[in-house]
Amino acid sequence: MNTTGDSPIPDAARSDIRGRRGARDLLVRALYQWQLAGHDLTELARQFELEADFASIDQAYFRVLLEIVLKDVETLDATIARFAVRSPAQLDAVGRAILLLALAELRHRPDVPTNAIINEAVELAKRYGATDSYRFVNALLDKAAAELGERDGRLTG
View (cartoon, rainbow, N blue to C red):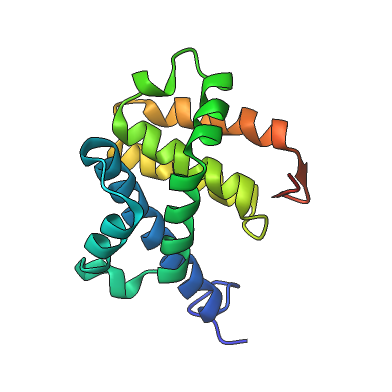
């Protein structure tokens, strides 16, 4: 097993983690732009594929999740509405983008551990969201994960 330093994580897995982290970062930006400008899937994909960062991210992960969120936004918003005291329309665009992305991952990416999805969303909220928005993101995603059901740290639903 080829690893870097003292980390038990193989280099290939570390690369996957960095690639997905970068994809999530760009996805939050794309979903923010979608909310403000209303661009469709094709336009958003085209614009973000031109970003300098795009070459270093997990491009397939970006494309698949962007499509999932835009096609499943009503269901994802309904999930937000079930667990939030305000409607998705009342959320700030950054917070909503982070929640839409994480909920799409929880629903459609059983290969990604639940705790990884929630932790990444919390980090995105700390980086881009309003002060303490990460607490709201964490609480809502914990509730959603419990509703969807977990098995061995991965979602089954």
